[in-house]
Image (cartoon, rainbow, N blue to C red; front, side, top):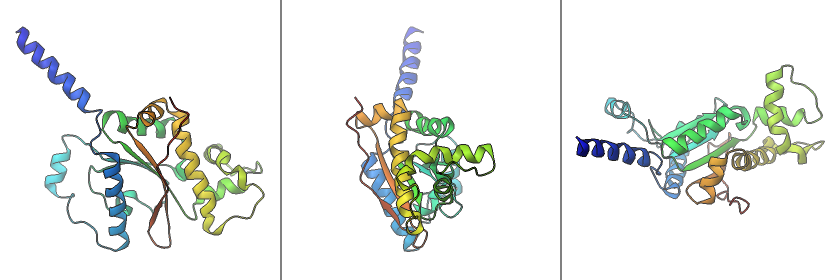
Length: 227
């Protein structure tokens, strides 16, 4: 009985440890994401990964290789944009990539319990949330408490654009927001900061271009402030 109990305990501990290990190396996951967008732009999408067999296989659990934090805009579904299939990416979507505890907690869950090690923070050109935030930098209201709270989260990232004419397709403002969100994830999540400092994860800012379907990636985010 003691041997059986020990073996049972060992299996539980092994599974618990395995759940926090990266399912795919983040550099490899980034290549998969980039290649998927190339296929999307070229209209050469995969046919695998969505069969009944895949559905049944994934009913037992998930091990996504990447997390995508993106805008809720209906024109940029990450699964299509990156040509990823069932169980491959863990998606968190909010207007303008606005952050609250629910969004951050969802990302932490995928990192800590599902084994994802790559976070893509993806904005897009002509983002309505960024436009709204830019237009209310003077303190004006969008009409509801919830909408004002949403753009309030974006305001600090756009302060350098206050009283300035917007860039073409709000691309500069959207990049500023994306890079601000990327930094905020590290500031507001101890778990993310610790994993980043230990080089266990990658965070990559990205921008979807509505006029082409192509995604531009900025350099991997790093910080020397986290110990």
